[in-house]
Each structure stands twice: as structure tokens, then as C-alpha cells.
Length: 154
Image (cartoon, rainbow, N blue to C red; front, top):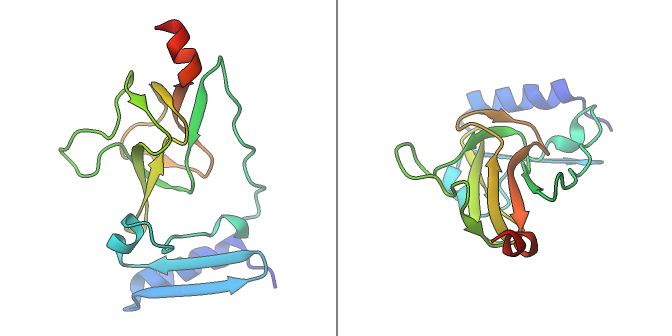
């Protein structure tokens, strides 16, 4: 059974208007979990929107390093937030050192917040997205100068 993108979007709209707190759907090639509990998603539970496999578009290829800079990419589509709350400092600034576990931003879909971690050690060289901007799955969010290269240029 194949589900089209428009059918997934219709399910999401119905869920948003419903009084349900959670919806789980699994079919061949698709696992969709919707939850209105933002705290559960922020705490790292499996509550997340996983609809990328239902799209007609092929998955984006993994971005490669450009000029030695490695991208941190969006794990899903949604709204990009540089800070945990409006009016608070951003998670990271250009020039800041990060480790693999450094939280660099949030991606929000339907009030579900997915924390994004650097995934490598180095220095933030560039922010590719403006705060509050919509991003697609696989879009570059930040460019990182890997640790070994950052040490060479210091």
C-alpha cells in the first residue's frame, strides 16, 4: 500500500483539528507519528513527524564538504529556530566551537520540536538559515570547520 504526499498532508490537517493527542500509522515504507505533546518531542521521545518516506521526491543526497566545511543538515522539514525561546540567546554563534553533542538549533513541525546536534567537533563557520525560516529535509543549517582544520588555521 502506497500513500501519496497529499494523503499524508490531509492526515496531518485532520490531526491538527482533532482532539486526539497522538496518532501513529505504519505501512510499508512509512512510519508516521504525530503528537501534540511538544515536551515529549523536546525530551527526545520517538514522537516526531516521520513522513519523508511518503513523499514522491527521492531523498536528498547527503551534502558533501565544500571548501573543507561540513554542513549540519535538517533532520526533517519544519521551522528553524536558533534559540530555545524568543528573546533568549541562540544555541550557537558563528565562530563558536562545537562538539558532536552540542545542540545547535531546533526544528519545529506542528508544535513538535526536534533538537539538532552538531554531529562533529569543530567551529561554526556560517549560519545558512535565518531564524524562523522554513527548511526542507537535508537542507544545510550551518557550515562547520572540522576540528583538525580549525586547529591548522588557529
